[in-house]
Length: 355
Image (cartoon, rainbow, N blue to C red; front, side):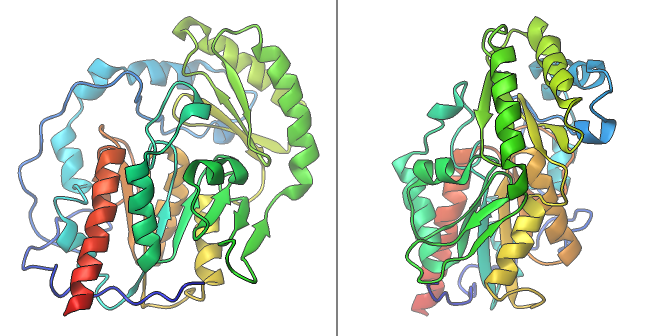
């Protein structure tokens, strides 16, 4: 892998202290919160419910009712200011957030959909901009960088198109290191489930044909049933069809994301496990001179946020315009701010190197 120098922030870190929040390693006050903005109907807040924990046999009413309750008007009325005190902007508090990274090796982890690319109605059209690609390329030139996505690894690679990155697809179950490396990092969890996933994919694809707007995406080790383009009155039908199929597959679990149902093997592997695996593969496991940064927008990213919180190292950054329950320490509102954060990180690194 490319040799990366430790992060030095002498020129960037000022006397500004970071805001106080539960679980964060910094203390001080927080500036006045920004006002909430009208909600974009295409950017619904993710529900904080794990359907697998509820059991496949449980009725759909609870999570569907919760989704309806998270309508634009109700979400806009939430106490955004109080939430921002706990999860302040990683841009507004950049110097304070990165103060703990001084003298340490930053390792960057990035979700794809909703983080590097906007959430779109057609998942096949979730293309990242050239500006974002340049920003990610710049970060990877200075810090080991990984894309951790629910997408199939090959699919997300075709979106990003950067060979110098690590890619963890299928919610971290399919990992591969930079292609330029002679001995690339490689790991696959749950490969024995591939035939079962293929079988369920064919069944669900046939069943979803009767529901306009529903789409089943094959991500090799898992499936995504998208209902962003489905009329609200048909949401129950989507859920019922998925649950009826999964009753025959007790070794698969069902979780819920942003207008998507995720079907995965019932194994102890997630984005948090992928983060731990990559840190170990890079030789950083158990070291106190490493500073992981994980940026993501979805419920599945919470597993990685929790790992960082339990480690007591690095920071998790949630991408969201609206309040959500999260283990992340900081927040960014949308992919545009993610791009700005990445650029600022590179600029700070370059300025520190010149000293």
